[in-house]
Length: 299
Image (cartoon, rainbow, N blue to C red; front, side, top):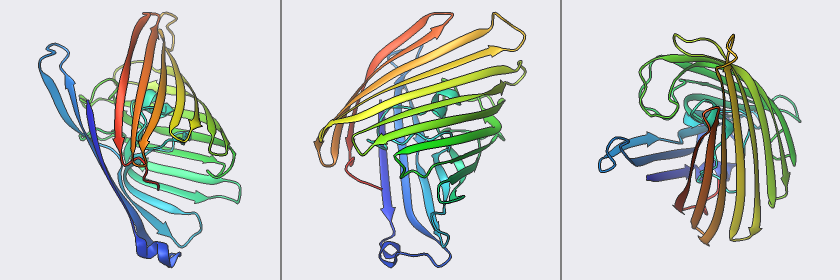
């Protein structure tokens, strides 16, 4: 179970003035979650943890379309905007590849030309965990501005990250990661959106051999009705240890969401999911339920 709380503020004076003389804060966001999970070895006992989510300050500058963020937010690893934003369970590619989709640090977005935007981040490589063991992460993406009906982008990533896959506890060991990739997004007005991403690279875990990694992400979301939104996401991750034909693994996740707007600021979602892994052929499936208050807020 997860209880998430978010507080978002905009600077009204800056909105009314409409310009920035040099650099100044324009909005703030605070979001954290309390998660309660039963222990694996004792279902009658529960683990309770505090998880930091989107917590940042946004700075506007005098340069057109150039903004800075300081804090904890989504890293520019491909581009996966959502029609139904902020509260959906549908993951992006980085969450399933790196095991986290947000990180703490400095974020920049600026135009390179009229047709291209550059996004960049320098972060701690720890994801949503509170502990830091000396990791770092650099990510960048260059591509079409977000207001285009068709967006194309190239992205790259390099760093040493904490091995947080499958757990919120780390032992301090770091994994070196390298990625390059591309994304393509098509939006049909505000009715439906398709996202496609692919990335390739290497992982070098602590005291382990280098691994080739391939990630593919596809998602589709559409509005069926002013109150109904439906989406489906499939993520595929393939990796193998260099020099070993037997050490190969494919992991896939198929996740859907059915969203109903109870009111302007209240939304209920049902999120079925199916996970598979080969060659072990392990399967895991279930349904997640989500009740969101304040979903009518826009940014």
